[in-house]
Image 1 (cartoon, rainbow, N blue to C red):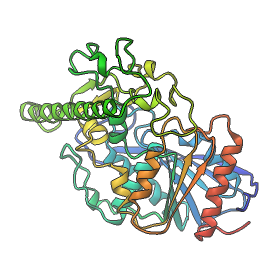
Image 2 (image 1 turned 45 degrees about the vertical axis):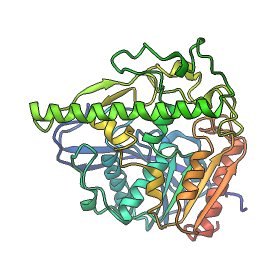
Image 3 (image 1 turned 30 degrees about the vertical axis):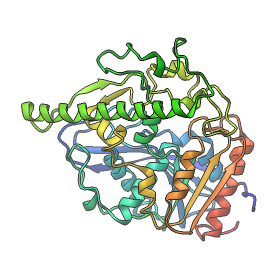
Length: 393
């Protein structure tokens, strides 16, 4: 495998702006009727045109992860573009994030002069990239799960030329369902919990390593809780619209969202991760802490992002609709996206132009792992060259 050549690069911030009509404003700041996306262009010196790698996560943050900078130093132009929901997914609509990624792709081609685009989906960006590319190749989503715009069949999304998945999970809805605390039986009394389903209750007689019977019961209860919240959200939205009109919305809190048995039992979906623990620290504390998945929601954002049965943004299903080359990079010590995620993606691809590599010992973010970042960048550069997306330096 060829080693990346060292390039100096510039980091240029810029904005992508476009008009959009909406029922109401979903984000706090900014001009009504305009969407403004904060972006960074990592430009290697002496490299122009050709192929650019574009990275977007539903709530942003990829611009300062180690891999984009490593790719720029290897001579690969990279754009890290935030969605309209930077660092706050409480009102996030996945279909609108697809529009945001489409605006970034179009800007890269029409304004920055790139001929080809390869999407880099890290973590939750993997499912987003697959969802985007599926809708660009064969658009099918006419509304959000709440029945609202946008109509992605009319969005004229630019197709990417390749998709790379980096430490990616299968989608926000399926991942939350695997993490949600099933011991909460009544959302109005979130701290009255079934001790036998509460992983963190000393009174729970079930301890790691968990039996297959207990895991089956636990997983079924997780699915049931997700569906109860979804049923309530649909009914509340319908009643509110009939009472107050089409723009009715309601905000709510979801308690207990970090209770995956994997965090306590390393024999489940095993890899090199430390156990017990997860990528956010002590899962017992994160379970009810302010930074947990889906903690703050609206009715529409729950249905679009987190509802197992109603979200359109199932990355695995979307990747099955993608025809372009796919590269998957798995982190061997990933304490966020464990191996079954990449296996589900791998099994979903319906063509032979797919490739998969394991970065042994790498954690979810490559934090403190310069050697692992270099290895991942080398894998990406090698793949880009072999696929004709860039030439040897």
